[in-house]
Length: 254
Image (cartoon, rainbow, N blue to C red; front, side, top):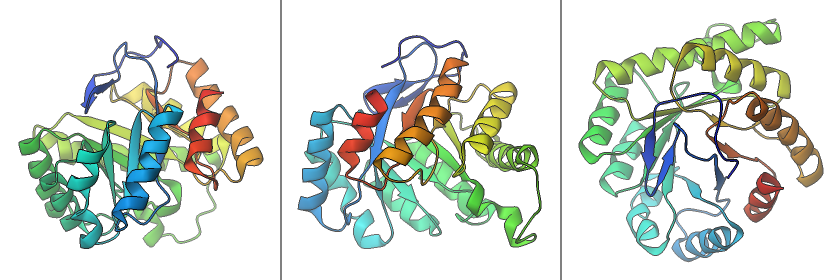
């Protein structure tokens, strides 16, 4: 999309796309359909393909949704990412269904032994993993519920939790990793991504989480994503809006 970047990262294959290295920045979106509803989800993804979406993520809240992933994948032309929270077994099923990438949140996916099981399944199937760190679900918030941290301290903690999870994956000989570090404000998002980019060659998926409606969300995302891209940081992007996902894709390109 945006051509060559300044920051050199390792290359991770996600279906037909390659993220990182000298590859163009790819545009992602996420369905807002019930993944258990095959027709609605496939119809929305096809609309997103038509709008230029290059990688699509779907929520996997339960096993019924997980068991639909293979049929969804066969019906679309772009890589499919399974978004997993809380239940590591859903990630195992997503891998068995043949998705193109799995996203896990280290703040809620479970203990190291559960993560290792997910890693083994993904390694065997050749599926990359995105470690999706969200400042609202950091592990440390269970011990310190209302921390009075500066934005810099938030950013450091987000990066620490990302790197802690990276070590679990890499200890299993797994390197097909993408990381995202998202907050609902520009400052912490930008700081965390810049800090991580100094410490690792892992490709970054960038975006401001829960950015808002079309106007406010586009403004926040333009500032946050734009600041990072101008510094060569960011390998794939998503504009998060509380709107039709097609508008997310349109905003990303514009």
